[in-house]
Image (spheres, rainbow, N blue to C red):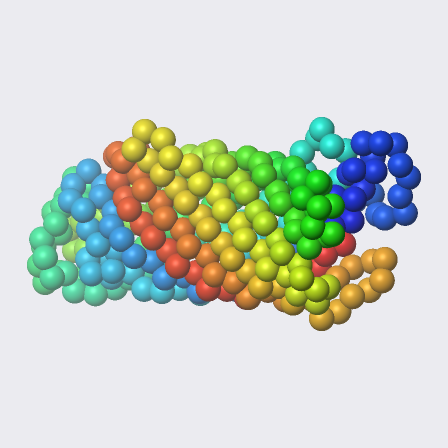
Length: 256
């Protein structure tokens, strides 16, 4: 999100030439701390991911890239990959059914839950917002397709079951970046969908600091952010869940 793109889009509408770059974008990578909570149900009972499956917090990473161009009718594109994998070990304190088998009290349990996701976002900048705010505001709206790859494996002395969901999920996308000065900006992003008893919400806020600028080339930035995700499934491939993941993070990248 950089204000020159909004200006260029307006100029292109009226055939006005401009010396700003024709293309813009960003590439970044980040470290993220993921804390899961909620429950999951696979054919049997609702089981708490902390108390029953013994899942712990995990350290992980994410990768992002964005590409913006000056042609008004063609959407810009962004891609993102977020790695999520949680493991747990412990002693079972209650009886519950997972899959087609029953977990018994006193047994040791090992769990592994993966929820990697891949995003492809097609979006438009709203150039008149940037012009009206003298470049302090940048707004994006569009459609996001998120491919989730959920696998929840539970193993005890008598149980070995894996719940699995792999599905593309369309989501509405919106973002606002506020840049009061050149050195810093505040970014808010949201992706959400609700249908047929299922819902998925992913909200993100980030403070970006841009300590190094190479004139007419790139800006280097460091971001400090917080992400909140909530995934609710109602009997999709025999899986129901209400899973929440809070995720403070730090990232670094370049704007070009």
